[in-house]
Image (cartoon, rainbow, N blue to C red):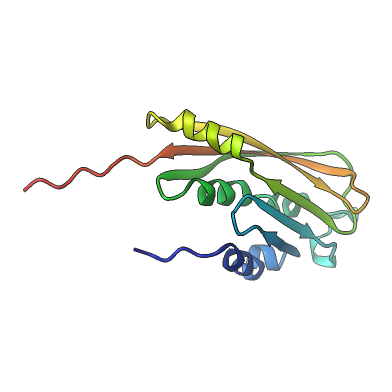
Length: 158
């Protein structure tokens, strides 16, 4: 049985992961219970676009794995959880430091468990706002997560 990595461990790994490290993305926090996370993106010369605002790919990347991680770790080993789809809507130019907060509540987890109780798949959309220092929404990111209960393994027959 492989050991499970803690929320602090995942946060440290993500902060050293080259796509985040070189984009200027920093994971500030992941709650020990895997229900909340906060990510920031600081403006750097290497993550600006042609017009001097945050590169859209970095804005999307800063939100990418978190709904999957939070859902997977909150539901536990009996579930398969994957990213299925994603989209981003740019609402205003992003400058300076921007942040994204994620919060997964019990009602959503209970609904996912109910939707997958029969072994079927469930597709769930999550929405995250990327906000600037003034709290104004810079971008709105939607992620669709695929969830299914793992099928029970049948014992091998001789």
